[in-house]
Image 1 (cartoon, rainbow, N blue to C red):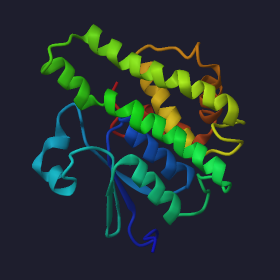
Image 2: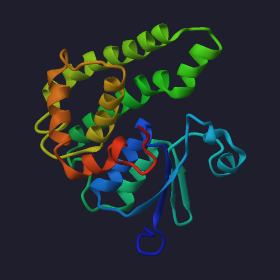
Image 3: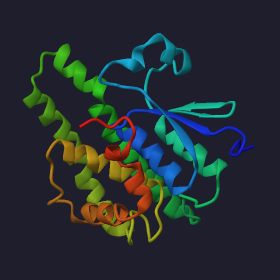
Image 4: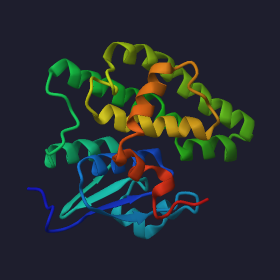
Length: 219
């Protein structure tokens, strides 16, 4: 049973983590109150014993809902959508649900693992790749998936990624575009992606969940 009203949801994350951003979006879109526990990835707090005892994988985000503890952003997003059904973030039609999952997986499986901070650090620290090579790696994997995603979205999008209601696909897309902008990438080649993100960013939930508006945000 949902524990809302008994125990406030607790989210362990990092302000600039796109995976944490995804979960914040779901929480905001559903109007759920939650307490944030910053885990500074740049300072290695995710590797400390205290956090590893909570989340042995040593990654963010991590959600606590009463006695429920969950890692991995997509699992958390789906849990929240199923446990707190108000303002659903999955369509009712089977094909539309499949399209949402397709978009979610394109970002979660085909971009994020290759561009995760620990992978970038390994490229630089263990394989001796400089910042130029590391950034080129980062941009390559975004461009490769965005090229395919743009074509898909041209067939699925309305106001948002799949139709005219916000879905989990949008909660994945906006943080990924945020990452792209951090590397000074433009969306000139991806007008559908740009349009969808612009529509999302007009919603208050997306403003409130944005990295710059988090309590641990740094200049």
